[in-house]
Image (cartoon, rainbow over all chains, first blue to last red; front, side, top):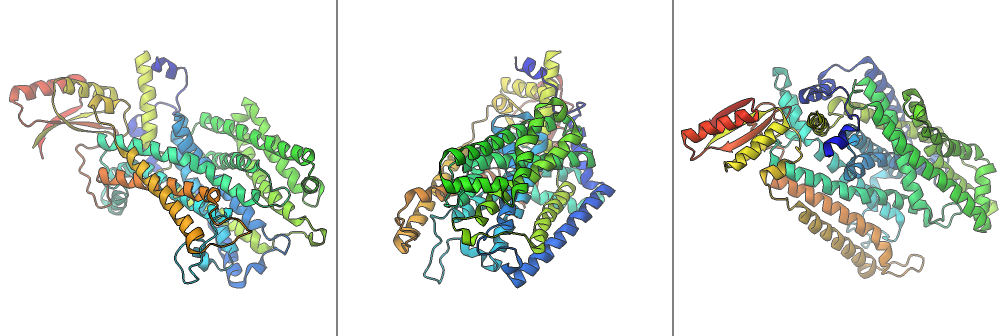
Length: 460
Length: 171
């Protein structure tokens, strides 16, 4: 019965490669010379990173006055970028943990790179609160530790402290999950590196693989560990963006003070994350020649999740608007009227177009299976989600309760530089990752490919 | 200790050999595979792992530790009046308690896994056969105390199951 059921679906790996072919296909890019395309991307990413590093250095050396913040808009670009990057990370955990619990086989070829994306995105996100501190070397003050100031403890009732704990936990668990998932592949690479010139590669992968030998007892425990980590990461990822949303929702500022925020932020996070996974994988499957493993069906499945979460985001926008009108709170109503018609209306309508309208194109199978259209849409998803955070933060702050303090916000070149730099950091890391580590989980793909082959044999 | 190593390149043949060996009551030392084979645990009759208990214990420590830390800091050591809220605002302590539960549960399980499976950066891998991390699967049987006839029968059994290579070795 199971075999028949599986046969109804086409395989998630094209062309039925043998186990050795899978090893070869995934390991080849790690030893081959980088292509010209890779060097071009790497040069652009490092340049962006250098610009960001210069901007951040100038900001830390001079002070937060180099940013466009003022007494009314005290949070703007930095928190926008922070929430944006944290959101990007969520798709990685969804693919690696939630789809594992739901036993979705298609996650196997994309989970590794999506998890890497999570880790790099959280690293980028962490930069912004640190830089906003002005004196980042005192960053450790946000943790509760015995100190000579009393000891004066952090305020455990503040969502900002919850955020610190949530994001450090998220980063740690994601890193452990990512590393544990790579151990069997490290062993594969260790055993492949048998040539004379491979001594260092063999040593490095030997250390990283922790002496893995493929014993069935270890595999049995390993699968339990994966399930446990997935089971823990699933509520964790939902909690992280819920807590991020509480940074806003527990404030009284019109446009922020709403119970809709946690689910709305989580849906938006997954939506933006899938946009980024699509952007990255459409490029890398081409550049690294992995079209056989990251197939059009994978892209289509991701497009479907983008459609689902995009619709949830669009529905949340409409709910917000309806409640602003129906709730009868004049401040709330004014805040939303200001968003749609005020000085930042262009940002609001960009957000509406990219997040509520454009994903609806994905109902069409023609759109979902066209790589160029998907690529453009995935870029627009990220533009839209960046503007969503900008709209929520800046439009609510610049028109607060007191008209005399209304002010405008304009980012400086330093803030733009740090944003560009965070993209530089993200892409530099990702490009190094696809050169240095196996970007497809070989052992997981082998399991899926073998199961598909046996299903066919049993049927024949 | 002498052992018999049979190398396979197909999971269904390996599973058949494992079942055959178990039927003949030959002790199986271990099976080495490049990926987790569905149904191998049952075929080998492996006991379920107790790792989830470690998760429970670690998670409980995280939870208790987070509650203790927050209550001690915010209520006992230095009750700080923030917006007139009560010092013991238990609901506001929930998010950090939740995160600490997850963090310690996850880290404890991973640590227990490394410890129980003897995985460490200094561990020297001793592959029983070439390619067990690539495309080969090795079944290792215990030979001590078997006579020559029994050994021949075992070779026969493994060949019949589809082993590509069968060899005896002393460790």
